[in-house]
Amino acid sequence: MNQRRSLLLGLAILCSSAATQAANLILDLGNGTTVPYLISTARDVSIAPGTGNITLRLVQSAGTAGDGWCPTGSGGPNPPVITSFIVSPGSVNVGGTVSATWSTTNATSCSTTASVLAGTVSNWPATVGTSSSGLSMVLPTAGSYAFRLQCEGPGGTSAVSTSTVTVTDPGDPNCNGVNPVPGTTRMVSFTNTNALRTDGNTEWPAGTVLAADNYSPVWGPAFPSRSGTGAIPLLNGQYAAMAFNTGTSTGSSTPWGGTNFGGLNWTQPQNNGGGTATVAISECQGDFSQRLPDPVKCFAQGNTGSMGFIIGTTGNRCPLALNKTYYLNIGFFNLQGQQTCGANNMCHFFGQPN
Image (cartoon, rainbow, N blue to C red; front, side, top):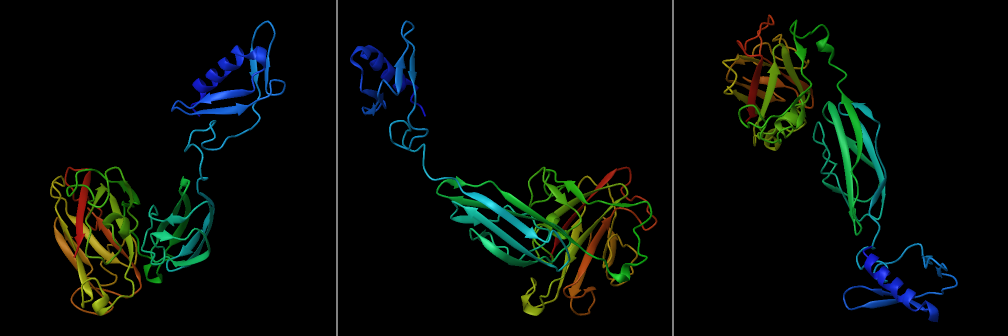
Protein backbone atom coordinates (compact mmCIF):
# COMPACT_ATOMS: atom_id res chain seq x y z
CA MET A 1 0.00 0.00 0.00
CA ASN A 2 1.74 3.10 -1.24
CA GLN A 3 0.23 5.52 1.29
CA ARG A 4 3.29 6.70 3.18
CA ARG A 5 3.20 10.14 1.58
CA SER A 6 -0.49 10.51 2.26
CA LEU A 7 -0.12 9.37 5.87
CA LEU A 8 2.66 11.89 6.51
CA LEU A 9 0.50 14.62 5.03
CA GLY A 10 -2.38 13.62 7.26
CA LEU A 11 -0.16 13.60 10.35
CA ALA A 12 1.17 17.05 9.45
CA ILE A 13 -2.40 18.34 9.35
CA LEU A 14 -3.03 16.67 12.70
CA CYS A 15 0.05 18.20 14.30
CA SER A 16 -0.69 21.70 13.05
CA SER A 17 -4.19 21.57 14.49
CA ALA A 18 -3.51 19.61 17.68
CA ALA A 19 -4.65 22.51 19.77
CA THR A 20 -8.10 22.29 18.22
CA GLN A 21 -8.31 18.46 18.55
CA ALA A 22 -8.53 17.52 14.85
CA ALA A 23 -11.43 15.25 13.97
CA ASN A 24 -10.13 13.71 10.75
CA LEU A 25 -6.96 12.23 9.30
CA ILE A 26 -7.01 13.32 5.66
CA LEU A 27 -5.58 10.86 3.11
CA ASP A 28 -4.55 12.45 -0.19
CA LEU A 29 -4.69 9.75 -2.91
CA GLY A 30 -2.62 11.89 -5.28
CA ASN A 31 -5.25 11.93 -8.02
CA GLY A 32 -7.26 14.88 -6.83
CA THR A 33 -9.19 12.77 -4.34
CA THR A 34 -8.97 13.01 -0.56
CA VAL A 35 -10.43 10.56 1.95
CA PRO A 36 -11.22 11.73 5.50
CA TYR A 37 -10.60 9.16 8.22
CA LEU A 38 -12.54 9.93 11.43
CA ILE A 39 -10.38 9.74 14.52
CA SER A 40 -10.65 10.49 18.20
CA THR A 41 -7.45 11.90 19.67
CA ALA A 42 -8.30 10.33 23.00
CA ARG A 43 -8.46 6.83 21.53
CA ASP A 44 -6.65 6.69 18.18
CA VAL A 45 -3.97 9.37 18.33
CA SER A 46 -1.82 10.64 21.17
CA ILE A 47 0.81 13.38 21.17
CA ALA A 48 3.61 12.98 23.71
CA PRO A 49 4.24 16.18 25.68
CA GLY A 50 7.74 17.54 25.27
CA THR A 51 8.87 15.33 22.37
CA GLY A 52 5.84 15.90 20.17
CA ASN A 53 5.96 12.24 19.09
CA ILE A 54 2.67 11.11 17.59
CA THR A 55 1.28 7.59 18.15
CA LEU A 56 -1.43 6.40 15.76
CA ARG A 57 -3.37 3.25 16.68
CA LEU A 58 -5.10 1.59 13.73
CA VAL A 59 -8.72 0.77 14.37
CA GLN A 60 -8.99 -1.74 11.48
CA SER A 61 -6.54 -4.64 11.08
CA ALA A 62 -7.07 -4.69 7.31
CA GLY A 63 -8.52 -2.51 4.60
CA THR A 64 -10.54 -3.17 1.50
CA ALA A 65 -9.74 -2.19 -2.06
CA GLY A 66 -10.60 1.44 -2.81
CA ASP A 67 -11.28 2.56 0.78
CA GLY A 68 -8.39 5.02 0.77
CA TRP A 69 -6.10 2.85 2.84
CA CYS A 70 -5.78 0.24 0.03
CA PRO A 71 -5.44 1.38 -3.58
CA THR A 72 -8.02 0.04 -6.01
CA GLY A 73 -6.97 -3.38 -7.29
CA SER A 74 -4.74 -4.36 -4.35
CA GLY A 75 -7.48 -6.49 -2.84
CA GLY A 76 -9.76 -8.82 -4.73
CA PRO A 77 -10.55 -12.53 -4.90
CA ASN A 78 -8.46 -15.09 -3.08
CA PRO A 79 -6.09 -17.16 -5.24
CA PRO A 80 -7.09 -20.74 -6.16
CA VAL A 81 -5.65 -23.53 -4.03
CA ILE A 82 -5.45 -27.27 -4.70
CA THR A 83 -6.36 -28.58 -1.26
CA SER A 84 -5.73 -32.23 -2.11
CA PHE A 85 -4.59 -34.28 -5.11
CA ILE A 86 -3.67 -37.95 -5.13
CA VAL A 87 -3.47 -40.71 -7.71
CA SER A 88 -3.54 -44.14 -6.11
CA PRO A 89 -2.25 -46.73 -5.76
CA GLY A 90 1.27 -45.43 -6.13
CA SER A 91 2.49 -48.49 -8.04
CA VAL A 92 0.77 -50.92 -10.43
CA ASN A 93 1.73 -53.43 -13.09
CA VAL A 94 1.44 -52.63 -16.80
CA GLY A 95 -2.26 -52.34 -17.72
CA GLY A 96 -3.25 -51.64 -14.11
CA THR A 97 -5.92 -49.13 -13.05
CA VAL A 98 -5.44 -46.12 -10.78
CA SER A 99 -7.88 -43.54 -9.42
CA ALA A 100 -7.32 -39.76 -9.25
CA THR A 101 -9.09 -37.63 -6.65
CA TRP A 102 -8.67 -33.92 -6.01
CA SER A 103 -10.35 -30.90 -4.48
CA THR A 104 -9.80 -27.15 -4.79
CA THR A 105 -10.94 -23.81 -3.42
CA ASN A 106 -11.42 -20.54 -5.35
CA ALA A 107 -10.85 -22.34 -8.68
CA THR A 108 -12.95 -22.23 -11.83
CA SER A 109 -10.89 -24.55 -14.09
CA CYS A 110 -7.95 -26.95 -13.89
CA SER A 111 -5.28 -28.09 -16.37
CA THR A 112 -3.21 -31.29 -16.61
CA THR A 113 -0.89 -30.19 -19.41
CA ALA A 114 2.20 -30.21 -17.16
CA SER A 115 1.90 -34.00 -16.70
CA VAL A 116 4.83 -36.18 -17.79
CA LEU A 117 3.58 -39.68 -18.59
CA ALA A 118 5.44 -42.79 -19.75
CA GLY A 119 2.52 -43.83 -21.95
CA THR A 120 -0.73 -42.46 -23.35
CA VAL A 121 -3.55 -42.23 -20.78
CA SER A 122 -6.72 -41.76 -22.82
CA ASN A 123 -8.95 -40.49 -20.01
CA TRP A 124 -6.53 -37.93 -18.51
CA PRO A 125 -7.59 -34.94 -20.67
CA ALA A 126 -5.82 -31.59 -20.95
CA THR A 127 -8.53 -29.88 -18.86
CA VAL A 128 -10.52 -31.33 -15.97
CA GLY A 129 -13.03 -30.13 -13.43
CA THR A 130 -12.17 -28.43 -10.15
CA SER A 131 -12.80 -31.62 -8.14
CA SER A 132 -13.12 -35.36 -8.57
CA SER A 133 -14.14 -38.15 -6.23
CA GLY A 134 -12.34 -40.74 -8.35
CA LEU A 135 -11.29 -40.60 -12.01
CA SER A 136 -10.35 -44.11 -13.15
CA MET A 137 -7.37 -44.49 -15.53
CA VAL A 138 -5.58 -47.43 -17.15
CA LEU A 139 -1.77 -47.12 -17.38
CA PRO A 140 -0.55 -49.00 -20.47
CA THR A 141 3.24 -48.77 -20.37
CA ALA A 142 5.96 -49.39 -17.80
CA GLY A 143 7.67 -46.32 -16.35
CA SER A 144 6.98 -43.26 -14.22
CA TYR A 145 3.73 -41.28 -14.54
CA ALA A 146 3.84 -37.79 -13.02
CA PHE A 147 0.25 -36.56 -12.96
CA ARG A 148 0.26 -32.79 -12.49
CA LEU A 149 -2.64 -30.46 -11.78
CA GLN A 150 -2.78 -26.66 -11.92
CA CYS A 151 -5.93 -24.59 -11.42
CA GLU A 152 -7.07 -21.07 -12.23
CA GLY A 153 -9.67 -18.73 -10.82
CA PRO A 154 -10.53 -15.03 -10.50
CA GLY A 155 -7.70 -14.71 -7.98
CA GLY A 156 -4.97 -16.06 -10.28
CA THR A 157 -3.22 -19.41 -10.82
CA SER A 158 -2.45 -22.07 -8.24
CA ALA A 159 0.85 -23.83 -7.66
CA VAL A 160 1.30 -27.14 -9.50
CA SER A 161 0.38 -30.23 -7.49
CA THR A 162 1.95 -33.56 -8.50
CA SER A 163 1.07 -37.18 -7.78
CA THR A 164 3.38 -39.89 -9.14
CA VAL A 165 2.67 -43.53 -10.01
CA THR A 166 5.27 -46.15 -10.95
CA VAL A 167 4.19 -48.79 -13.49
CA THR A 168 6.27 -51.94 -13.64
CA ASP A 169 6.37 -54.85 -16.03
CA PRO A 170 6.31 -58.06 -13.97
CA GLY A 171 8.24 -59.76 -16.72
CA ASP A 172 7.46 -62.41 -19.25
CA PRO A 173 8.07 -66.05 -18.30
CA ASN A 174 9.73 -66.44 -21.70
CA CYS A 175 12.50 -64.14 -20.44
CA ASN A 176 13.75 -66.55 -17.78
CA GLY A 177 17.42 -67.08 -18.49
CA VAL A 178 17.63 -64.24 -21.03
CA ASN A 179 20.45 -61.87 -20.02
CA PRO A 180 22.04 -58.76 -21.56
CA VAL A 181 25.30 -59.05 -23.45
CA PRO A 182 28.06 -59.62 -20.85
CA GLY A 183 29.90 -56.46 -19.87
CA THR A 184 27.06 -54.13 -20.87
CA THR A 185 24.72 -52.04 -18.71
CA ARG A 186 21.31 -50.51 -19.32
CA MET A 187 20.98 -46.72 -19.75
CA VAL A 188 17.83 -45.45 -17.99
CA SER A 189 17.99 -41.70 -18.80
CA PHE A 190 20.05 -39.05 -20.61
CA THR A 191 20.14 -35.27 -21.04
CA ASN A 192 19.07 -34.00 -24.44
CA THR A 193 21.54 -31.76 -26.29
CA ASN A 194 20.85 -28.86 -28.64
CA ALA A 195 22.30 -30.08 -31.96
CA LEU A 196 18.99 -31.27 -33.39
CA ARG A 197 19.04 -34.07 -35.96
CA THR A 198 22.65 -34.75 -35.11
CA ASP A 199 22.65 -35.69 -31.45
CA GLY A 200 19.35 -34.30 -30.16
CA ASN A 201 15.62 -34.91 -30.18
CA THR A 202 13.44 -32.65 -32.28
CA GLU A 203 10.51 -32.81 -29.87
CA TRP A 204 12.36 -31.73 -26.74
CA PRO A 205 14.31 -28.60 -25.73
CA ALA A 206 18.00 -28.76 -24.92
CA GLY A 207 18.75 -29.78 -21.34
CA THR A 208 15.64 -31.94 -20.99
CA VAL A 209 16.28 -35.19 -19.09
CA LEU A 210 14.62 -38.03 -21.02
CA ALA A 211 13.80 -41.47 -19.68
CA ALA A 212 15.42 -44.13 -21.88
CA ASP A 213 13.51 -47.07 -20.36
CA ASN A 214 10.39 -46.21 -22.38
CA TYR A 215 9.72 -45.52 -26.05
CA SER A 216 7.46 -42.46 -25.66
CA PRO A 217 9.79 -40.00 -23.85
CA VAL A 218 12.44 -40.33 -26.58
CA TRP A 219 10.27 -40.28 -29.70
CA GLY A 220 7.52 -38.03 -28.32
CA PRO A 221 4.34 -39.89 -29.31
CA ALA A 222 3.52 -43.38 -28.09
CA PHE A 223 4.23 -46.47 -30.16
CA PRO A 224 3.25 -47.07 -32.96
CA SER A 225 2.80 -43.46 -34.12
CA ARG A 226 4.47 -42.65 -37.46
CA SER A 227 5.74 -39.25 -36.26
CA GLY A 228 8.64 -38.11 -34.10
CA THR A 229 12.40 -38.39 -34.22
CA GLY A 230 14.78 -39.39 -31.48
CA ALA A 231 18.51 -39.56 -30.88
CA ILE A 232 19.95 -41.67 -28.07
CA PRO A 233 23.57 -41.15 -26.93
CA LEU A 234 25.06 -44.46 -25.78
CA LEU A 235 28.36 -44.65 -23.97
CA ASN A 236 30.76 -47.51 -24.55
CA GLY A 237 29.13 -50.63 -23.11
CA GLN A 238 25.66 -49.14 -22.68
CA TYR A 239 22.42 -50.30 -24.24
CA ALA A 240 18.91 -48.84 -24.26
CA ALA A 241 15.87 -51.04 -23.65
CA MET A 242 12.72 -48.98 -24.30
CA ALA A 243 9.41 -50.57 -23.38
CA PHE A 244 6.34 -50.08 -25.58
CA ASN A 245 2.87 -51.60 -25.77
CA THR A 246 1.33 -52.61 -29.10
CA GLY A 247 -2.21 -51.64 -28.05
CA THR A 248 -5.42 -53.05 -29.54
CA SER A 249 -5.68 -51.25 -32.91
CA THR A 250 -6.03 -53.33 -36.05
CA GLY A 251 -6.91 -52.73 -39.70
CA SER A 252 -8.02 -49.22 -40.63
CA SER A 253 -7.65 -47.94 -37.05
CA THR A 254 -3.87 -48.34 -37.08
CA PRO A 255 -1.61 -45.33 -37.78
CA TRP A 256 -0.81 -46.84 -41.21
CA GLY A 257 -4.40 -46.63 -42.47
CA GLY A 258 -5.68 -50.12 -43.24
CA THR A 259 -2.48 -52.04 -42.66
CA ASN A 260 -1.00 -53.59 -39.55
CA PHE A 261 2.65 -52.87 -40.17
CA GLY A 262 5.17 -50.11 -39.70
CA GLY A 263 8.87 -49.69 -39.20
CA LEU A 264 11.77 -47.85 -37.61
CA ASN A 265 14.55 -46.31 -39.70
CA TRP A 266 17.86 -45.09 -38.34
CA THR A 267 20.61 -43.04 -39.92
CA GLN A 268 24.27 -42.24 -39.26
CA PRO A 269 24.74 -39.05 -37.15
CA GLN A 270 27.73 -36.99 -38.15
CA ASN A 271 29.75 -37.64 -35.00
CA ASN A 272 29.46 -41.45 -34.80
CA GLY A 273 32.64 -42.22 -36.71
CA GLY A 274 31.09 -45.26 -38.42
CA GLY A 275 29.55 -46.84 -35.32
CA THR A 276 27.43 -49.91 -36.06
CA ALA A 277 24.15 -50.22 -34.17
CA THR A 278 22.69 -53.54 -33.02
CA VAL A 279 18.89 -53.38 -32.82
CA ALA A 280 16.41 -55.98 -31.60
CA ILE A 281 12.73 -56.09 -30.65
CA SER A 282 12.04 -58.61 -27.89
CA GLU A 283 9.70 -59.46 -25.04
CA CYS A 284 12.77 -59.12 -22.81
CA GLN A 285 14.77 -56.02 -21.94
CA GLY A 286 18.38 -56.08 -23.08
CA ASP A 287 17.77 -59.17 -25.24
CA PHE A 288 19.98 -59.24 -28.35
CA SER A 289 19.88 -63.04 -28.65
CA GLN A 290 17.79 -63.09 -31.86
CA ARG A 291 15.42 -65.42 -30.00
CA LEU A 292 12.17 -63.44 -29.37
CA PRO A 293 9.74 -62.88 -30.93
CA ASP A 294 11.41 -63.97 -34.20
CA PRO A 295 15.07 -65.03 -34.54
CA VAL A 296 15.64 -63.24 -37.87
CA LYS A 297 13.00 -60.58 -38.52
CA CYS A 298 13.35 -58.82 -35.15
CA PHE A 299 17.11 -58.28 -35.33
CA ALA A 300 19.22 -55.89 -37.43
CA GLN A 301 22.69 -54.35 -37.51
CA GLY A 302 24.21 -51.39 -39.33
CA ASN A 303 25.29 -47.75 -39.04
CA THR A 304 22.12 -47.09 -41.06
CA GLY A 305 19.20 -49.45 -41.40
CA SER A 306 15.58 -50.24 -40.72
CA MET A 307 13.37 -52.78 -39.00
CA GLY A 308 9.79 -53.48 -40.02
CA PHE A 309 7.14 -54.89 -37.69
CA ILE A 310 3.65 -56.28 -38.13
CA ILE A 311 1.01 -56.33 -35.39
CA GLY A 312 -1.57 -58.99 -34.67
CA THR A 313 -0.78 -61.23 -37.63
CA THR A 314 2.12 -62.87 -39.44
CA GLY A 315 4.09 -61.72 -42.42
CA ASN A 316 7.56 -60.84 -43.64
CA ARG A 317 8.20 -58.38 -40.78
CA CYS A 318 8.89 -58.70 -37.06
CA PRO A 319 5.64 -60.23 -35.67
CA LEU A 320 4.17 -58.50 -32.60
CA ALA A 321 1.10 -59.60 -30.66
CA LEU A 322 -1.71 -57.17 -29.84
CA ASN A 323 -1.84 -55.51 -26.40
CA LYS A 324 1.57 -56.81 -25.37
CA THR A 325 4.66 -55.09 -23.98
CA TYR A 326 7.92 -55.40 -25.91
CA TYR A 327 11.34 -53.75 -25.73
CA LEU A 328 13.22 -51.92 -28.44
CA ASN A 329 16.81 -52.85 -27.56
CA ILE A 330 19.66 -50.75 -29.01
CA GLY A 331 23.41 -50.92 -28.51
CA PHE A 332 26.69 -50.15 -30.28
CA PHE A 333 28.44 -53.46 -29.72
CA ASN A 334 28.51 -56.90 -31.29
CA LEU A 335 27.08 -59.94 -29.57
CA GLN A 336 30.44 -60.65 -27.93
CA GLY A 337 30.25 -57.24 -26.21
CA GLN A 338 32.94 -55.58 -28.34
CA GLN A 339 32.40 -51.85 -28.92
CA THR A 340 31.61 -50.87 -32.53
CA CYS A 341 32.12 -47.11 -32.17
CA GLY A 342 35.80 -47.27 -33.05
CA ALA A 343 37.80 -44.75 -31.05
CA ASN A 344 34.65 -42.92 -29.92
CA ASN A 345 33.47 -43.31 -26.35
CA MET A 346 29.88 -42.48 -27.39
CA CYS A 347 27.69 -43.19 -30.40
CA HIS A 348 24.26 -41.82 -31.23
CA PHE A 349 21.30 -43.79 -32.53
CA PHE A 350 19.09 -41.44 -34.59
CA GLY A 351 15.79 -43.04 -35.53
CA GLN A 352 12.39 -42.19 -36.93
CA PRO A 353 9.28 -44.41 -37.02
CA ASN A 354 7.40 -44.71 -40.31
